Image (cartoon, rainbow, N blue to C red; front, side, top):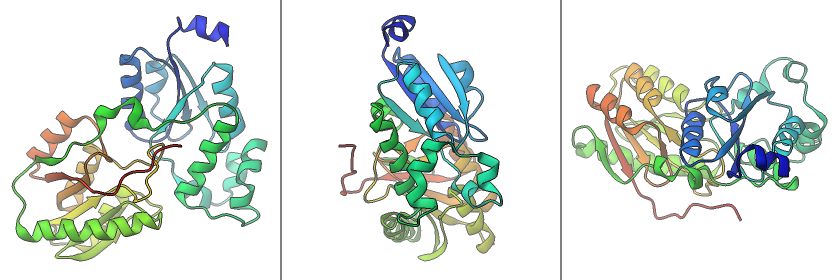
Length: 297
């Protein structure tokens, strides 16, 4: 540990478990600006290779190599960590998935009740909590990513675009209620709505695929996308995130309004996000909810 601290010049060492998307890159950049020594594990077939250049220590890890991930952080003196980015749970259901990913012993011990004995479910929160608990047992607690990069949280207000019509406001209110109920069941965080009818609900496929399905079912376009935090949201993982990529999917699908939850949704690269939305005439609003989010104990 002393050798590791010396090599980092006494800087705060933070571990980053990086999944898919540009969000882990934004987190790494923020940590570096804060003067942290960043030890990053990029999940294979998920993480952006740019992380290898941004972080002080970097290694690729297989999605089922939990023991190796824990050893990497311990060997590099990591005493606190956070995670960011999407983890594609659909990998679990691919043919020959177990042979392709060859889980290590720690992974098998941790997830035996979920995948083999059937004693526990495979909901997102359940699986991600199992990962967080496994690291905590080895003295590496995971903190909410918003503690490290609070400036990424969307602030309340009308962020961009024309004022919403009364039907659009009603669609957001309607979609909000549906999305909160789906989140409470740990199914998904996003819905697509048109004239207070549900077009699509996010599940294992993710937000972008949900939006594309909504566009397929609403050829006339002009529908609304609502993305919120779960009522029981643990801010250490699976925090709702939007960025330019979300807007690009909306444009392609024909959506015209995006409603997100202020204070609990991560908004990536806001200047580019706002410019893109304005250019493509997408209205974006961030609303507040009275339900407090759950934090790590």
